[in-house]
Length: 248
Image (cartoon, rainbow, N blue to C red; front, side, top):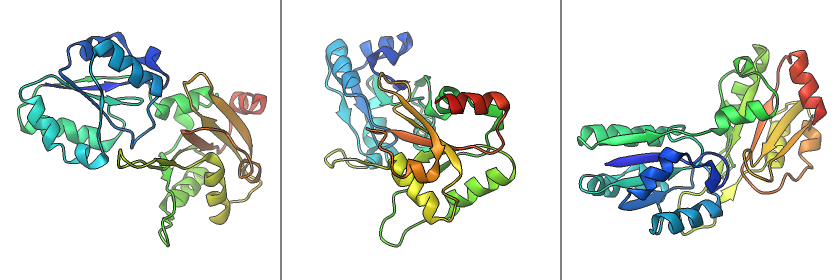
């Protein structure tokens, strides 16, 4: 059996009771960090309470889950996911692999940055358009599609939640996280006016959460501290949304 456990956005206190029960019944516990960094206290807590060492999987081990699938045929396997259990396509694909192999699977949901960021910034969810992700440039690779999506949302009067890239595919390599400041520079380089006001949220759901609102050109010079960061490019603001953002 495979259980995909959403850890929520904070430390070990964010794990649901269903998650705690599933961990206590697990023979093997795995986790990944390529979708979001995991709270170190969470790993320590899991090791202490479950009496098992959580095993760090690379992206390829989750996308090509032969090891997990084989273990799940005979044992209770848990995979820990920061945020909600099924926010990433690779986790949905893992469910499909279980179905194909007649392996029982359960999902334990939790809070996700996809909804939490809008909430903590005082923005109304139904005013958002499609989500996009800005990626860290590699050589000449600088995709323009995220910028196009932001512009399309702005034209339609919709806010844009912009997720920021993570390079953490291999457990043995130090992860690299895009910052809100780097994202702001990308927007400026893509010819968005530095005078446009945007919002940023760092470490949402954690004790040291930080929220910010101001001009793109100001964010480009602002350090919001440790990852993960997200930004929101607002379009037409409701008066309550504007009042909340300006209160930041």
